[in-house]
Image 1 (cartoon, rainbow, N blue to C red):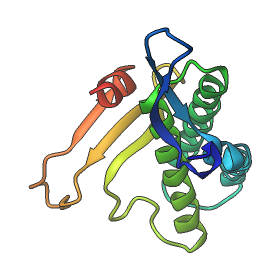
Image 2: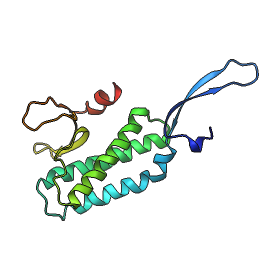
Image 3: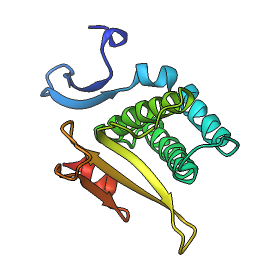
Image 4: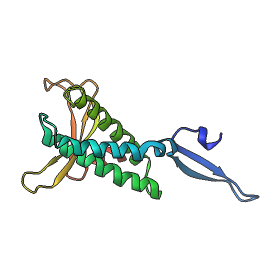
Length: 167
């Protein structure tokens, strides 16, 4: 199939030249993502800057979340562009874009941005002790209940991506 008709994702390209043995080469397509990612990241950055002037509960948490998301997306997209990214990085970019676009929509509609959310959430907080931005990931199962009866998983201190994305 022509490459433009293929969905983004991982493929194996089998190559063979004359009598040489066939060679399988992994190929990671990101053309559809590439068509929109710059504009989507810029929109997340703009909204993160707008948050500072908004009256919102837990605004500090949202500011930290958006700052981290923008940094993660710029770094990960740079890896994708340079050819050094792996499949989990591409999946992380997609997941983070969707997470922060939904968070923005919920805020603008006047809803709690975190209420009822499940899945793998990329978040951050600003440390009171050091002032540094501290990223973490929170994984809430689809069956999550707020009464404390559902187990959740949190990864922080620099382990969040290595542990959750590498399997």
